[in-house]
Image 1 (cartoon, rainbow, N blue to C red):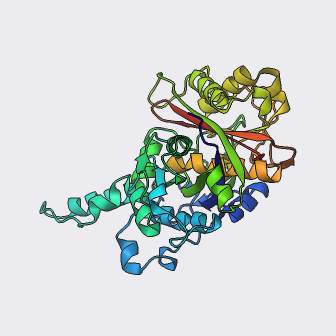
Image 2: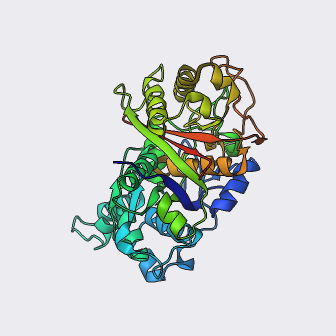
Length: 417
């Protein structure tokens, strides 16, 4: 059986540095930091009091006020980007075959804000169970995929994927394989996360995973910098409209790029820490290259996981050198988390969108907030520090790794008929 080719025909993004995929890209290229003091709750007693929040988001601008109250913030995000992505791809209820379009959508945590608030409200009472009837449907992780399908009448394959911070990259991989096998013509795929809350920030603070640079939030996310002290929490959502090439050509769709391949592995090492030699990261990049039928020398840019944690940045860099050898010095590397923060389960898709944009525009978004070289990192690598760079980008690879040792990556390349 000959596998079908998969292309990207639409995108949608809601991020801390832009509320459309074009605004997001403009924010990345200009080196804009999305970090600021937390406004979504009173964080004055928390160790970390800043985050990368989505700005100027009003769910009632696209949802009925009553309906907006019935869905968690992460699902509101998902519906918002689904509208942009469907319109960007030129798709609507009148021109699609709903049985051949599906949704594969990821989230690392889902409706944490809903869960937190319901439990707090119960604890404040006298023990009598009084819960919102929408508590469970608002909270469950798969509801975003279901809500997208109902909003756009998409009746093809529909499910959720969770693998912590690798969730939306794994979702993209599953979507690509469904199209390759002919199970659908189009899959709306991506992820959403919205956990900037007392439980989210408090939980990650307790793990000592987040930066506590409260005096300078804008520069707190500093991947590959010697003085990095942890990740900055972000929230976001993103979607790629993935389509069978023949189907896209038949309807005259605009094609951004081709999805060449993807891979998934496990570290089998530790619940939160990466393998110190980057073993899982190495294997997932090799798996994606094999899936794409490509050589390491075919890759011009890597959008790294690059969370700004002391261990993670070193392990991933070791893996890159192991996989790419001397070619590693010819590539550009950057971590857009320096601008968006770490958007957890949504990180993979918004970084895949950055990789698509890099291929389309031949521009590498920077790693901002670099002040001091880390002697434990190879200084000859091009980390694209502080300023975007222009170069030919034939193909780009996007890495995402999650707690539990989950690793996923996707490769996109210029479309050639």
